[in-house]
Length: 466
Ligand SMILES: *[C@@H]1O[C@H](CO)[C@@H](O)[C@H](O)[C@H]1NC(C)=O
Ligand SMILES: *[C@@H]1O[C@H](CO)[C@@H](O)[C@H](O)[C@H]1NC(C)=O
Ligand SMILES: *[C@@H]1O[C@H](CO)[C@@H](O)[C@H](O)[C@H]1NC(C)=O
Ligand SMILES: *[C@@H]1O[C@H](CO)[C@@H](O)[C@H](O)[C@H]1NC(C)=O
Image (cartoon, rainbow, N blue to C red; front, side):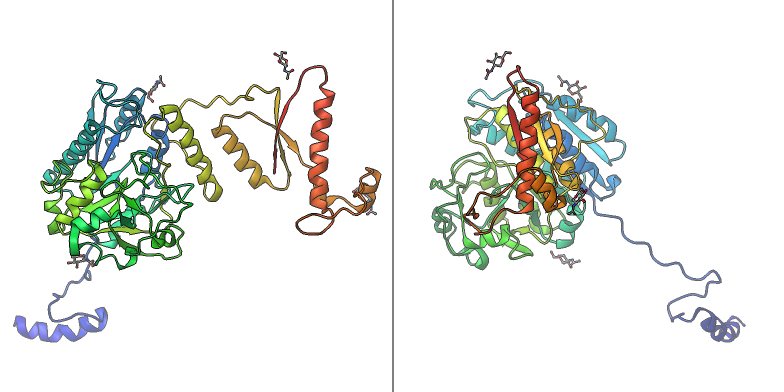
């Protein structure tokens, strides 16, 4: 009876649903589509030290990552601080912990420095070892919690592209880094290492890196390692500049490229079988080169048969230049203002996380009586950017509306008694004065007038010509 009924009903349902196949039952409600997979589980590993100046901006980039927080865990460690890093990180974690799957927090109030370091930018062996152990601890946690990925980001790397994590996951590489920009050619990858490495690695090294195999160091390029060493020194396993490096760094070749070294920000896929052999600490027993965390880890990857990749398909974010070992925290803070202003050249300014309280900066006039900023009213974009940059640099300015040379007509210029010196031609272009140059001159002239008017006082002027 059932068979007969089925035989009778099938043609009717087919005509309604249109796509019933052999392995589908006939449901009156219609068939629900399968839901998408949940996003992979990512453990974000943060190691912060003396980062009070960068953390609020860094954490905002994390806040803005377009990735479900419920699929992310945070592993955060901080120690050896002489600044407010611990309090800032704690404040942020307290606010966000309910958003994330879980949070592991490892603050250490004392000691405030390593006994064998001569400053916060110096990397003695004890510091390398400590950082490697922390990374290893984060990796262990990620494995224990069965995270699919572990994402290491230095807390002075700013992922301004909220899709960075998604894009890196899509690459399906065991270890991959987003290429980060600095205000020089410095970035978070190497295309080559010094010859000691290729010799030690033997044939296995180099053959995979056809892109990066040419060895060449442009004389004008000054490169530093993460730890601030001058990389032109022939340290074992140290950086080597290749022509490919510049092609990648300047986006002349875009993609994801096999390279011998990535550092600072990197995503590791713990689902890949080879990843089980990765370790940050202790260094591999065959490791004999410079005791530097990034080199130790690159060696570990090679030993595990894992290729490192750098991606520059998009713009992902920024990192500061490394400082020299003798430099102070103040130098680091100043260096960071360059990152803040550099970002604004092409992108919206970095913001601070809404989960941390950041006291407003106190701009001043640098000891001058007045600091003028000359700006054309019709260039509001430049005005806004300059004001923001000057705020970040803590410089308080008085805006002076520029004379718009393009809006001046001949009779006005004549009335102002402005005339070009007879026979004057611009030494570069050979032309005479432009309206813009007349406007520029007049703007400065009027500033000088104002300075004069506020006489008796000794006024000095710092001007920005925009
Ligand atoms: C340190 O950071 C905490 C949390 O953001 C803040 O409440 C406190 O005022 C800061 N202290 C100093 C000395 O900046
Ligand atoms: C990702 O790579 C693995 C091998 O590591 C492969 O088995 C898998 O099919 C790849 N996934 C995608 C979506 O390409
Ligand atoms: C020049 O501009 C002024 C002010 O806008 C205007 O009063 C004057 O008529 C203009 N002269 C000529 C010749 O266009
Ligand atoms: C400006 O005046 C202040 C005191 O009013 C004085 O200390 C300073 O030396 C003066 N600067 C110059 C360049 O004269």
